[in-house]
Image (cartoon, rainbow, N blue to C red; front, top):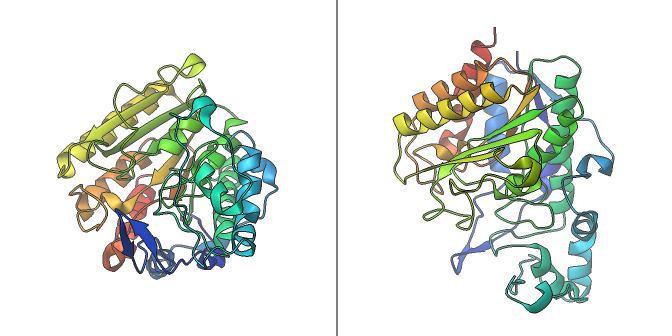
Amino acid sequence: MLPVLVDDTHRGHDPAYELNAGRTVAPVPERPARVEVIHAALVAAGFATQLSRRHDDEVLDGVHDPEMVAYLRGAYTAWREAGGPEVMIADTFRSPAWAGGGRRPRSPLGALGWYCTDTATPLVAGSYAAARAAVDLACTAADLVLAGASAAYALTRPPGHHAGPSYFGGFCLLNHAAAAAQRLRGSGTVAIIDVDVHHGNGTQDVFWTAGDVLYLSMHTDPDHQYPFFSGATDELGAGPGQGTTRNLPLAPGTGDAGFLRAVEVACELVTAFDPASVVVSLGLDVAAEDPLGQLEVTDDGLARAGALLGRLQRPTVLVQEGGYALPELGQLAVTTLSAFTRVRG
């Protein structure tokens, strides 16, 4: 049975509200109940859970700028000491149009906008610990695979694939999928398959110049969906990584047929790349019921996608990304992971 890695530290990341499209949103979509319903459904379905192992910060080497990690570690305390409110949300963001790229301000109230990309990623006292625990979960899953397990699933929260080398946003603080891939990379080439409804701009940027990491993403066309500024078909990587980034954007309203064709293409590209291992950024927000998604994938579509990923028969780390339809979320996870597991034998 597929091992499921869990950690209750995620509960500390529980902002009372966020700002999205200029509106106050409460409760926030990315909240502790997401993990709770998935966890309960997987246990009821017979999946065995286990706790993660703590890792040193070196697991973030090559993924994030150490200055950003250090900032995140102490940001909330500094924000509150400077008079910031209980929920930490930036209101001023750096722009590449500034001469020289601007400079990081000394003020704890202004520094947030140096790293954060949007107002929908609030921080509270337990946010950094939750994100750091998610990295431990993903790296523990990678450790299991490196030790001989055929696959492992990390029930991670907050999600991670929008966090890049020196920025975070889109609900994501630290990129746990990239950390798992970096850990696996020491034993050979890695393919990352991102099936979240949103493009994983952070993961793409981490491995933009890496020739030994293939990044594949299927997502709603960024002309219509966050993160808007990345995820087009002409983004292919650079330098040694030229050609190892491939995006498969889908029109809003795409259902099972179009989504599964994208998964098939991704699997074909993985087979041609012939990696030693695979990381799956599993976004269940592709489901038709998801309040933040724009695709129309059914429960059966997710089952078939899970089977396609399983048939790759590669050592695989699966990490949880998006998925916000709480009434359906547990069943969607069980459906996808059960189908993945069945074809593994």
